[in-house]
Amino acid sequence: MNRNLFTRLVWVGIVAVAFGLVEAVVVVYLREIYYPHGFALPLASMSLNHIGIEISREAATIVILTGLGILAGSSRWQRFGFFLVSFAVWDIFYYIWLKVLLGWPASILDWDVLFLIPIPWIGPVLAPVIISIALLGAGVAMIVHEDRSPTFAFGRPEAIIALVATGVILYTFMADVQATLHGASPQSYRYLLFIAGMAGYGTVLLRMVQRIPRSR
Image (cartoon, rainbow, N blue to C red; front, side, top):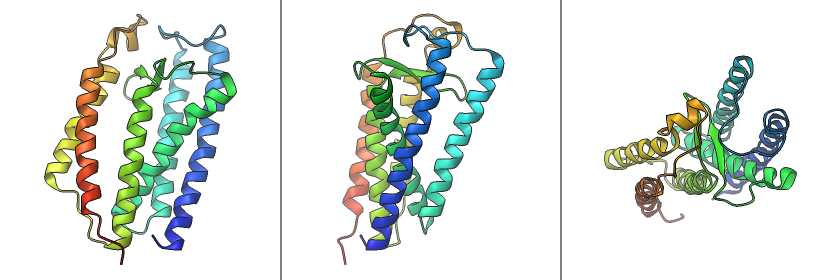
């Protein structure tokens, strides 16, 4: 990896770490309002105004991380790789900052609200952290591949596996509509389905790493 590309990767990481802090600070205030006695499921009822504000904030977060990838990369796949890196680092450090600021989560198996679009996603902290680690690996693989040989191609088999794995994992986060939409206590998390989805991600990541050309 050339020096310029490495510098861009470092700065993307630094910005993502800082943005993770911004996200965590917002959540500190939200929990003071809606969970003054400590965060726990079932979900507290939010005002429609606050729900709209939160959805717009999360949409803006994705736009910012996407823009970071576009600015840092120099080709289509490299930009996507930088986006994956920024998203992964942001998400991982969001939980690290929450631990620093609130002492939460007490365990990586603690449940959290992961996202709100199109409906709330819920699951144990362990799940998004594992996903982010996989996305970080995929992003770096794309960036390095494009640096060594600008012929990266996401084949149809990898695309199908990745889409199916994503669908399975999203199902584990959103399937319990009684908990996500109606304020009920969550059912047991679908760990077996999550493992199956991550196995698909792992397969795609392995194929990507195997395709990386040797350094010139």
